[in-house]
Image 1 (cartoon, rainbow over the protein chains, first blue to last red):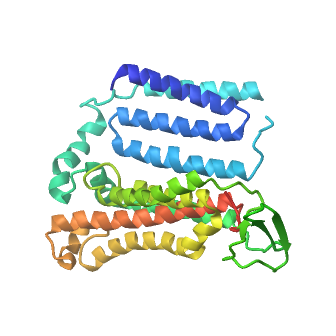
Image 2 (image 1 turned 30 degrees about the vertical axis):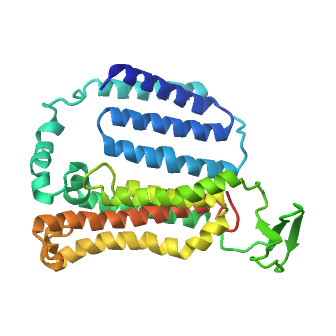
Image 3 (image 1 turned 120 degrees about the vertical axis):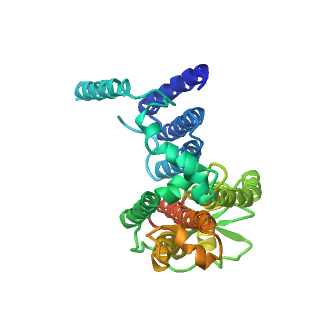
Length: 81
Length: 275
C-alpha cells in the first residue's frame, strides 16, 4: 500500500459519506453513493484485492447507482428531513 | 432522539475501532488466515484445477457451495423485487403520442391507438424527455462493445480478475443502458419479461445441474473432476471447464436479475413506461 494515496482516498471516502447523509437532493445523494463506491473500489485495488475491486466497481458504482437514480425518478427528488 | 442515535453510533464505532486494533496487520504471514488454508490453496490450486487465478478457483471450486447459494440469494432478491413491485392489474389505458414534425402531443384514452410503425407519430412516456441524437448514437456504438467485454470478463475469469458476477452485472448494465437511452418498451421488445424470468432460473439450473451431473458420474456434488469422462479430458482440465460452466450459469442469473430489478424500479412495477 502507498500511504499518501491511502490517506487521500480515505479522506474522500469520509467526505463522501458525510455529504451523502447531509445533502437534501436525493439525486445528488445517489451520485455521491456512486462516488463513495468507486473510492472503496480504489481502496480494494490498493490492497491488492483486484477481484473485489472489480465487483465493487461494477455492482456498487455501476448498477446500484442506476437503481438509486431509477428510484429517485419514481419519487420526489427533494427530501424533507 | 438524534442525540440518542449519535451516542449509539459513536459507541458502535468505538467498539469496531477497538476490535480492529487487534486485527493482524495487512499481509502478516503469521495471521491465522495466512497459516491454515491459504497456503494450501496457493500451492495446490493451479495443480488441482488448472486455473491461474486462485480467487476464481476458490470461489467456484473449493467454495462451490457458497457461490451456488450466493447465486440463489441474488435470484431470491430479484424474485422478491418482482413480487413486491410488479403490478399486474391494468390501469385505464392511456397512451401519449407525439407528432414528430410539429411536436404536438396527443393523449389517447381507451384501447384506441396509432400503429406502432407510424412515421408521423411516435409513442412517448407521460414524462417525456427529448431524445438526444448524440447520446443515442454513442450508446448504440458502445453497447455491443460493452457486451463483448462482459463475455470476455466471464470467459477470462480463469486468468484475470472477473468471473460470473462481474460479467453478468456488465451484461445486465448494457441492457439497462439501452433502456435508458431509448425507452423501456424498446428494451422489452428486445428481451421480454418472461425471457428474463426464465434466464434467471436457467442460470441456477445450470449451476445446480452441473453439481448434480457430478453426482451422476460418481463424484461428490460440485466435484467437477467427475465430469472428465463426459468431456473427454483429464480430471484437472474437467475441473477448469466445470468452473467455466458454473460461471456462465452465475452470469446468466445475475444479468437477468439486474434487468428485472431495474425494470421494476424504473417503471414502478407497471412495465409500460419508465426511465
